[in-house]
Length: 215
Image 1 (cartoon, rainbow, N blue to C red):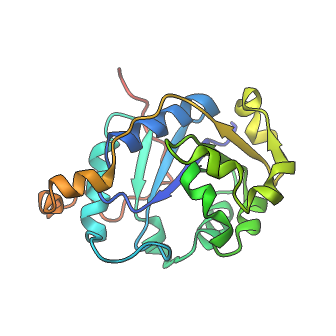
Image 2: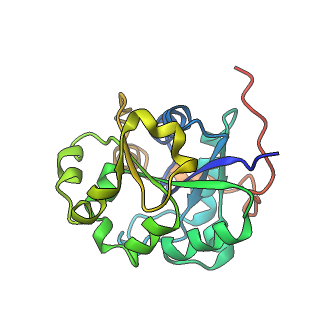
């Protein structure tokens, strides 16, 4: 029995919204994934703390948005006491050796990828899929990290073969985006996190397979 093909997507999910769900489902389709894990960050070193809701509320909003989809929202990074993506990914690969993982990030993240700790090590740990993001795609192609990553780019038509690629490997995925913005949602409802005062679960383990959606 082959291991599961899993996409990993990190973020603050402050709050999680339909845009997160849309891009994740598109990535699952284009990469032929069994499921995706949302790694709800306890704190992004590159983002200000001001306006950041508690982890429990952000996790609960992500779990709610992931319902009835092959998406698992988890506080894995908090439980690993992992502050940096590179440490999280290396631990995940070590803990789940039978699964195959691909790191998924938006074009906006690629723009600043060179500022991430040990970003080249991230690229050597697992393949990377970059998702289109309105207003960032041109910048992403000219990003400092692309100066190194460009030689490892794979054609989008081969995206479903990512589990067979040697790393580093990068694929750029384009599709019609959902323009929902967490910033706009917070502006419209600054107290959104109050609805999640009683989180669904703060310790869900991503090891068990998810049931596929019934729709």
